[in-house]
Each structure stands twice: as C-alpha cells, then as structure tokens.
View 1 (cartoon, rainbow, N blue to C red):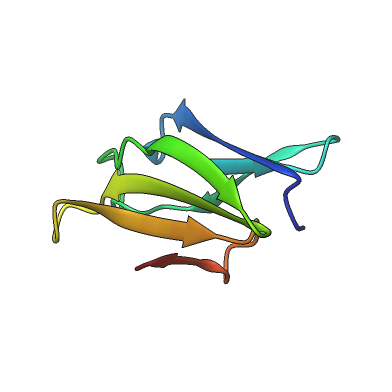
View 2: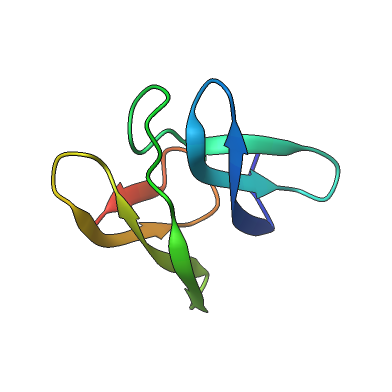
Length: 77
C-alpha cells in the first residue's frame, strides 16, 4: 500500500509511530522506535512527493526522516 496521507498514531503494540492511509485503511508504515517505545513523529512537511518529519528512534535521538508513503521508502536522513 502506498499511503496518500501520513500521520502519527498510537497503538498498544508499537506506541506512537508513523502510520499511513490510502483512504480505505490505515497501516503502520514503520515502527521507528522498536517495540512499544514511541518515536513521536512530528513536524510533517510535504515536498516533491515525500513527507519529511522528525522522530526519535531511541538510538540517534530526534532526527530528520523521510517517507514516500511506503514502508520501504521510510528512512532516516
């Protein structure tokens, strides 16, 4: 699924993480802070087909990330 919108959402399995929706269903795009820890994604900005945001993976601290709306296209910059 390629998400047409991305957002932060919380569930019991992965904490507050990056989610996306194609307009029909929502899915976890990436569990940035593994397990129930929360990466708290925020500051979403769209530019040229990518969404840039900050998140804390629990290793590098709060850093800049990018997503193209797919799990494989979500990465630490």
